[in-house]
Length: 117
Image (tube, rainbow, N blue to C red; front, side, top):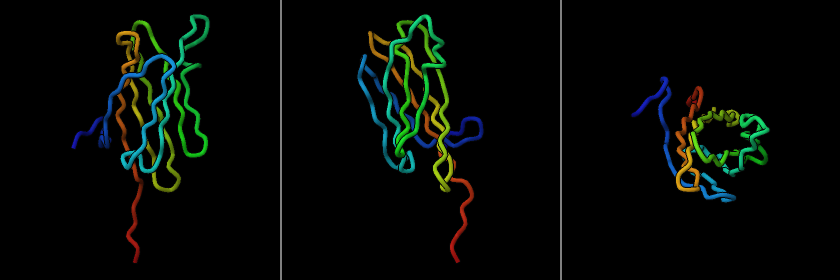
C-alpha cells in the first residue's frame, strides 16, 4: 500500500480534458461521492486561485480547473463525507496539446470504526 504524508492512497487516475469538456468521477473509491470537473480559461486580470474553486451541491463536488497554455497547477480538495469520514483529492494539471492533462490522487479517511455488539 502506497502512503503519502502518512495517508494511504485509495486510488489514482489521469485523464485529458478538452476546452469546454466536463468529466465526472464516481465509484467506490470515492465512498459514494462524486467529483465533477469543468475547465475555464484563466483571465490575466483575475487571480487564478480565486477562479479555481470547488462547490458542493446535492452530494456532487464541482471543481473548476484552469485550462492553462503553459505552466502547471496543483491543489487539494477536502470533503467531509458525513459521519463516514473524509475524502482528500490531490489534483494536478498541465497543458498538453491544447488539452488539460489532469492527475488525481484520492485518499479516504473513514475515521473511527466501531463494531456493533
